[in-house]
Each structure stands twice: as C-alpha cells, then as structure tokens.
Image (tube, rainbow, N blue to C red; front, side, top):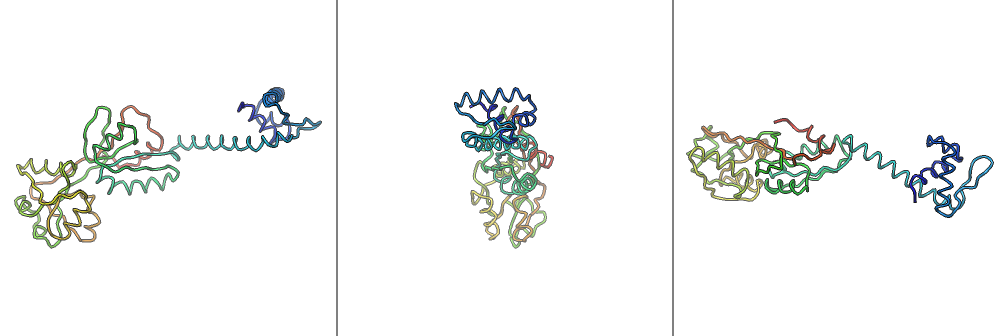
Length: 292
C-alpha cells in the first residue's frame, strides 16, 4: 500500500471534497484526483462516491479511514518524538557508574535531570571501573562515571569532579580524639578496607606507600555500607570517600580524623567512546554536570 496515496485519501476523506483535500495538501486538484484513481485501482475497490458537490465515503472508504487516521496519528507522534529527541526532552540515556559515584553522587544528578526532562528514560548500571569501561566498549551504555581509569585508546576521559578520601572512626574511638592523628597511630588500630581491585583501596594503598607504609587490613569487606556500619561499632577504622560518609557525619555516628602529613585526593572521571555521536539527552546530562 502506497503511503502517499493513503495520506491523500485521508486528507480528502477528512475535508469532504477533492478540492479541499488538495488545498490541505498544497497540491493541485488534478494531481489529487489522479492519485486517488491510482489508489482505488491498486486496491480494487471504490473509496468515494463522486457527488455534484464533494465526495462521500463508500463502505470500503469508511473501513480504510479508520486505519488511515491511525497511521496519520502515528506519523504525527513520530515527528513529535524526533523533535523532542533533538531538543533533548525525550529519548533514552544509558549510564554506568563505579560504586562510590553510583551510590553517592548519581542519585542527586539523576533526580535533577529527571525534574528537567521527565520523558527521558534513564538506566544506570553500577559496577567496577573495569566493568563500566567494558560496557562502554561494547556499546551497552552511553557514558560512564568512575573513580579511576583502566585505560583504553578507544575511550575519552574527562574529570568532572574531585573526591577526598578520609579516615573515619566511631566518635568515641581513641583515634577520634587525635586531631590530626599521626600515621603511626593509624597503624596501631584494626583497619577495614574494600576487596583487592577496589578503586578506593588502590588509591589509599598508593598514598600510604608514598609515605613508605604498606597497609595490611584487619578486615576486608565488599561494600562501603558494610565498612561504615562496622566502623560505627568501634572495632576498627577505615579510609573512605568523603561523599560516602556525609549522612553519618551529619548524624554524628562517624567522625573524620585528619591524618598528620597526609591528605588523599582523587579525580572523578566521565568516560565516553571516542568519535561517537552524542544524543541530545546525553548532551543535556553532560551540560548539567559540575565542571572538574
């Protein structure tokens, strides 16, 4: 079925005459009459009764009109969807984030974006930095946010924020009474850390190694929440992202202890595939991000 013929049929059916349909479509009356004749011949049915003034739908025409109206509505909806996509107000955005960024930075960013663009579908995958980069390389996500870099020439890395890793303890823990605490004191207390492969652990170990100190955790826990809750009991201390302990500091269930002669900062990265087209929703999200 020729969609051009169908649109001409729909215009004539809606306006009630060939001349009015031609005006609606901004083409000549003779062209409309010719196209309608070809359409009826192709279908093998008569769609209109030609009257002295105007036209009247036949039974076949009335049947076809319902389908034609639906198709015109779908066409209009498609045009609106494409326009909204170009404006960034509709579409789909697939993101990935490493654990600290995904748990403590992304929720506020997603809520802010959602308020501005409620019709954009958002998907967030939270995983390790290596897994996020692999998802980008496999085109499973459009953008990634991580605390570190594994490294690929196919990916572009840009700093979008910075983070500080801080020593935390229960408020009544002995080390919490020191301000700042000497690094020798840090080594005297059980240290809780993430598993090997964690970006937070790697940065922490590197910072202490620069001071010629090798860290040996007393307890290894898989999640930041588990580390925080365990530290709250007073059985040990830990080094975590400042973003991760905001609520506990506000509730005074944890304290930050400054370390004498050592501060640990790290950049946070947004990662994208090089040379790929960025959709308007993706561009809108990136424009909303804080800068470096």
